[in-house]
Figure (spheres, rainbow, N blue to C red):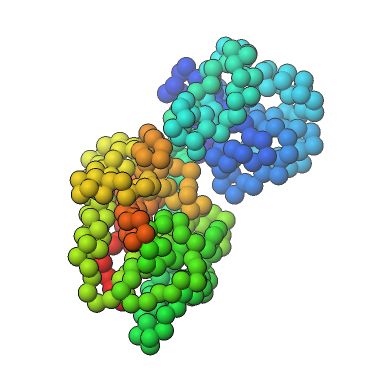
Length: 392
C-alpha cells in the first residue's frame, strides 16, 4: 500500500467520524479485494489469519502469525506477531476496541455477493466484543479497479491487439466459407487463439465461439459443430499482455454467413445495438454532467430499451462488468438483474457494455464494447458495434 492510497483512506475516514478505522481481514487469499489495495501485485502466501488495521489516527498495524513472519515483511505497518488463538485475540482487541464501529469488506444484504468477503464467524466474534461492522466500500471504493496512466495506455494497446486478432479470425472464416469448406466452432476457436498468441495476448480461459442455435447459449463451449452458410456466428474473446498488472480487453462480435439477413434477425440485432448505444450515451451524459451513477442504474437503462421491444425475458444476464487485471474486475458491475449493484462508477476505470437477446434454440445476439472512463468526465469506446449486422 503506497502512501497515496493510505492518505486516501485516512481522508475518507475523516469524512466518516463514526468509524474508528478500516480492518482488512484475510485467510489464505480470500479477501483479494483488500489484498489488491495493499499491493496490486501482492499474491499472499500467508497460511494463517491476517489482519491489517488502519485507524482513523495513528500508525497502521499488521497482525501476522509467527510462521508467516518472513512472508509479511514487505507489507506496510507495524508488525505484531501471534502464535496461539489466545494471543491473536489479545493482540487484535488491543488495537480494535470494545464498542467501536469499524469498516470491513462486508455488504449488508445478500444482493451483492462479490462484496460479501467477511465470514459470519469472524463477524460474530467481533460483535461479541460489541464491535459494529459496516461496509468499507465508501472508504476503498474509489480506489478499486482504478487503472493507472500506464495501465490505460496498455489497455489501448491490448484493445488494438484483440481487434486485430478478431479481424484476422473473421478473414480466415470468410476464406474457408468462400472455398465451400465448413470449419467447426473448435477450428475457429483454435484459429482465434493462434491470432491472439501472435499478438502477445494471454487469457484465463479460452474464447467463446458459437454458431447457429448455439449463439443462444451465453456461455457456450465450442463443439465440432459445422459453420455453414446463413448462420449467426458469435465470438466472445478477452485477453491481456503478460504483465501481472496489465488490464484485460473483452469484446464480443457477431457476423452472419449470408448476404440476405432475415428481417427478424436484423430486428433483434438492431434492438441490441440500440440498447448498447443508449447505455453508452447515458453513461457519457452523466459523466459530463458530473452526476453520480450506480451500476444498477446503468443496467436499468439498457434493460428498459430491450423490454420496450418485448425481448426482456430474452436478456438473461447483467449489462456489463468492471474490467481490470482480471477480466471480471472488483469494481462496480452494470447490474440490477443478477445482483443489485448500488456502487458508484468511478473515474479511471473500464467496463463492458454487453446487452444480449437470446432466442432459445434459434440464435442469440450479444454485442460487447468496452468503455474506458477518464477522470475529466470523458470516456472512450472500444469495439463499438455497427448499426446493422455485418455479414461474411
